[in-house]
Amino acid sequence: MTISSNLESFAGRRVVDFAPDSAPAVGDPAAVAWRLRLESYGDDRRSFDELFDQFLDTVAPDRVEALVVGTWAAEMYDVTAEVVVRRLRAEVARLRRLRSLF
Image 1 (cartoon, rainbow, N blue to C red):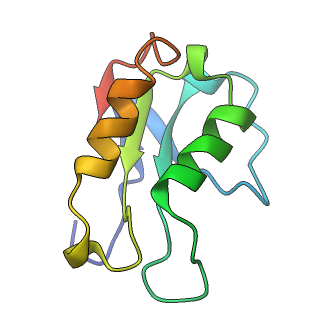
Image 2: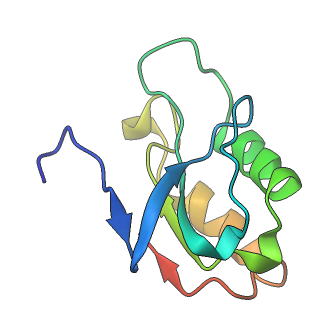
């Protein structure tokens, strides 16, 4: 895998991009590894917190077993991964089945 390509599978599951405007129809949230990422070059000006809130409101978080976190800020070099770690720690009770994190 090169730096410009994305994982297609993780933890024995197909990786599915979470896009709140066009969330894919997934019967069981545990059947896939959800990829959360912001567009680093483009018009996406949401924060990771906003994207994560949308994810938790759209997908049953108590069924999620695998997450792939991609770009967490438009300017990743200016924002550490602490924003991701903080949110995951804050939502540990809701993500109680999460076993795999990339």
